[in-house]
Image (spheres, rainbow, N blue to C red):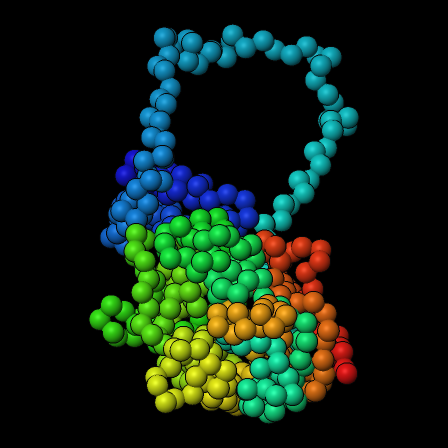
Length: 438
């Protein structure tokens, strides 16, 4: 039993490094799953089987810190030998007999009450999604509210075709002009920092600890599914790759118009990096069209979609002679949003959110010089369950996106998203209600 007990104690110690809310959300991690395999082997008569032995070995290799912290098992106590046969078992003659007055008569003997059967422990109830069960969140770079939704819009598909089909959030604003503060807030509820406002030139300084959770962590625990689709994401050899990010001590130098980690907030959370969720679900955008053709039950409940630097709408990032800035973003949006709106998952119970996760630096300078607000970008909600052509003037921001998606799926908001002043549009989908009209 010692061969089983020591790996098990080490696994428990590793799991103990996650506490409170984090442990509840990460209980399905590979660490705890490995512990379960080891436990199951204890019921066998021949010790660890090969599967359990391999799981225990993997646990020791992947979590050396937790293993080192695990207490060594104490030796089993053995009963001390009796000093004499008389001490070990008193003779019947040595036992005193009760007095006749202390023996209850059969008529007066108390009847033991039947034991109340204890109910087996029940699993906690999992959250349930409301009417919306598939969310598609697109994140672009803004060249200003008027450039997107104004009378002289530079995005004719967004303002002329898509906007009449949905509800315009006229007072949606960014937290900062940089991409990372808004992306991290939208999936993790974390406030901007000096490093994220600079789009984290030093990648390691922006990595958030494992106890800092995300919407993706919540979905995994609640048995919902998620995917992030990033255009142009590739490994160092130029092949499509998952969860691509700089090395901890490196500075990212993205190719002009290509993929950049600053557009991919999921790679900044240890909770997703360390347990493999990012490697599994953070994928190149080339997989989106294929996934959208699947049956609704096979499509992720939450889908984050971000184009590359050119198609996001950043000026000066596209090849010379091709559409640039807002025009490039609008052309990409027409193709991608069209595929989403035609998908079975969207048609059944979907919500498309077209948001802006950053401000184009050149456009932001021009707006500021003209007395405008580069943080005001607007956003659009499109769903079969919303009244088309409506507007909503409440103050929304990236925290609102997180809070709204959490509430749509019966989850509690994370971080700053649970603030009393953070508005949610989830109520538009409750009890048949719709967002406010004009």
